[in-house]
Amino acid sequence: MSKKERPSFEEALKRLEDIVNQLEDESISLEKSIDLYEEGIKLSKICTETLEEAELRIKKVADQHNDDNEKE
Image 1 (tube, one colour):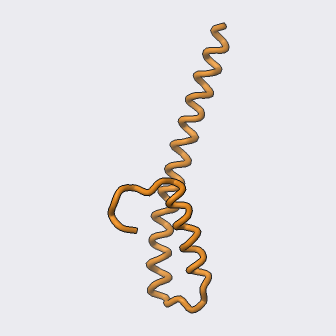
Image 2 (cartoon, rainbow, N blue to C red):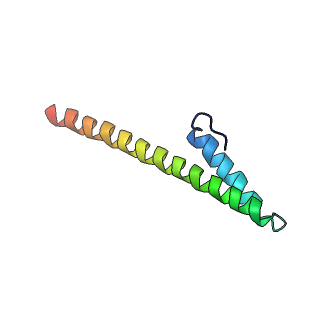
């Protein structure tokens, strides 16, 4: 993964799928496997952070909706 802007969740997930497919290839070298594993860990962290942020946003909207309903 190059040091450009952070990939979207969808881009990171797609790249993770590509990495898994490559790692399942038994002919891949150990060095390449390690490089892919490191990249996969970074992408996994991005996906996890993105999902956690989305969960917080959804919770905030739901809480706000519940508060609005209680006022009526």
